[in-house]
Length: 112
Image 1: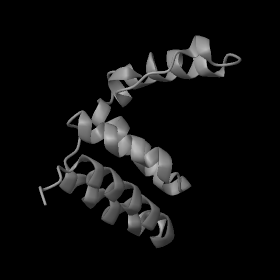
Image 2: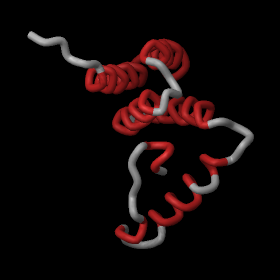
Image 3: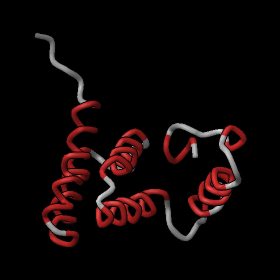
């Protein structure tokens, strides 16, 4: 989870077993399989989250993709344009908003 998202969650601090399954299985097994690299998995995840309208989770994906060097700022913006034509404009607006929030946070501010 740390490698994928640059943060982790201690499943022992969460109630029930759901958190443990998420951390151990999803990040310990699924994201580590060799048939797709991390960038491919990231792109698939972004597409699914876009189709579901999950803007807050898209911010995590975009931030992680940029931080890990899996995507450039231009590629993130290109993703929003491409996805708009597949998920629909209303959902793509949320994708674009999430992308631009992350890009704005990560762009150094010029001195006034």
